[in-house]
Structures are given as structure tokens and as C-alpha cells.
Length: 214
Image (tube, rainbow, N blue to C red; front, side):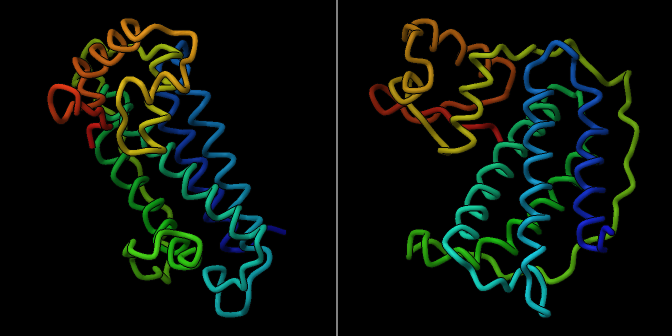
């Protein structure tokens, strides 16, 4: 029997699946985002099954539980990165994106204080969010607003995933996930993502970094 908390996780995953239907079928991010949404839901359910009466956010963390929560934070960041791309490409309505992103941010805020001992001691963490917002209402995207989107290649998807995990990177950093690709090709992919507004470039000369455009 599904409890109330698990039901909310399921509804959120279904909401993500709903907006992903507006991604082009040929775009590799569509299936990657679905996989992330499913993995997040499974891990949230796993964490919530071993909770104290005070709620799932107050778990006595074993080492394995902490690893699950670290993975949850990483997966949520990557999924939000995919959804942000969908928003910039106008595949997702801005209202839908904000509703879903807000729900995942609340989940993140509930997880981060728990794993604080294994994170950087100087990192400031937000307070625990006690209540999960009820199921959101979703708005049908306006087809007339759509422009011809930039279709993300598999290489560019790896670049986006790397930036979602590491916040920023130089060309040499990206070659660690694209070892068989030349710097010239990596720069061409970065230029296309820059032109599409998916990423931004900061710095100059030898201190140029690339970040997701959030």
C-alpha cells in the first residue's frame, strides 16, 4: 500500500514525465531525464521507508543512507538542468518548469541539512522544509510561442550533465568525459550551446569557464 509521502513522490515523477512529452522524440535528453526522475523517486521512497515518527527528513543516517542522499542531490541537480534546457528551448512552459523546480528544491532543502557532516564545513545549508506542497496544476504549453529548437547531441548532453554536476568547467575538464573528442570539436559543441542560450561563458583568455545558463 502506497503511503501519503510515497504518493506525492509518484505524482511529482508523473508530472515530470508529463512535461517531457513535449521534448522531441529524437532528443537524447528526453530518456535521460525520465531515467533521472525515476531514480529520484525510487531513492526518495527508499529513504522514506526507514524514517522516524518525526518524518523522513530526520533519519538516523547510516553510511549507506548518506550515500543515497548524496546521489539524490546529484540526480536532482542533473534533472533540473535537463528541464532548464527544455524551458530555454521552449519545449516546457515556464510555469510548469517553475512548479516542478520548486518541488525538487524543497526536497533538496530537506536532504542537505542531514548530510551536512560529509559536505564541506564552510558550505551554508538551507533549513529543513517540513511540508511538501500539494500536487501542482500544470499549464498546457503554448505551441505558438515555440521557436525552432536547438537539438542537443549526445556529446552536448554529456557536457550539460558534467556542468550540472560541477557547476563550471574549462575545455580540458570536459575532455575527461569526452576522451576521444578533440578540443576543436568540444569548442564547436560549446559554441552551439552558447548560441542556443543553454550555457554561458565567463572569464577571458586562459581563465574561460562554461556554466549552465540559469
